[in-house]
Image 1 (cartoon, rainbow, N blue to C red):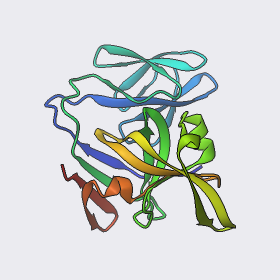
Image 2: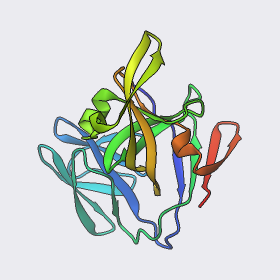
Image 3: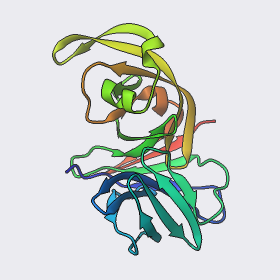
Length: 210
């Protein structure tokens, strides 16, 4: 199991609404991602980070936060529950995992993905299997040749409608879908260049430029 790094969010709303996504199912339990905490399997009647699971079905779960109930469906974007969402956030504070990597969950075009920050990558890079799962129309993109650990491979250059991490969303992000399998989506500089970046020990702070 891969340990996920932490993520703290600064939001503009006066009332904090939690971000909750259904990342998977483990038997009778729902695998929840709450804000930026690592996924947790939670059964009906149990609570995690203030999110109470009311019911778990085949590919959906009903949750409650501060009296507000929402239905989460597998593969859909995180929802805001329990408060006013306010304006889009502008600041992210990422915390490295035990290996020094910045790994967590976000969404591309509204579909949940696991990402790793890669300051050495010129663009966002997505494995073909992830692109298929997210329904990306990459085969209509520009065909490119790219170097890989196994030699020269094939990829497709495309524009993503949106990339969202926590409350921060960037639109029209350039990406390359590679035919090589990848354990994570790599968040490269086509996303990171939208931010002013600072590093301190195991933390990375991203402040949106515009």
